[in-house]
Length: 154
Image (cartoon, rainbow, N blue to C red; front, side, top):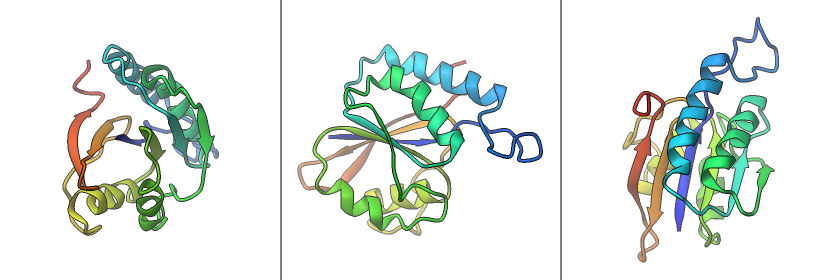
């Protein structure tokens, strides 16, 4: 099972757009990342995203590259200050590959919990519009497989 952790792409400032949809830079970044990922022919079950517009818009664009066979779903537990243990527990019973599109610091804490079993470490540094791929090992632990950021796929 592969798990894709995705920090939403760059968003507009609240003064420009109170809903904070994706900025032009954010759209461009996630489109480049999606284009690159689509060449990898990744099979993915479902993409879950937070209730925030910028996460939804990122997930919609990303779905073309990750070939989300089971579609997209807005869900709880992915907001910036949510407890990472929510998804840590949910992932124990999910067997198909999934993507989670959310926010910092939540994604950093979740990645740390999955990789180090301690949400206070920093095993990876996320970037807006980047995709982190973790793989669940037979032991049940997760390991870093790869990470793609917008600046890598210029």
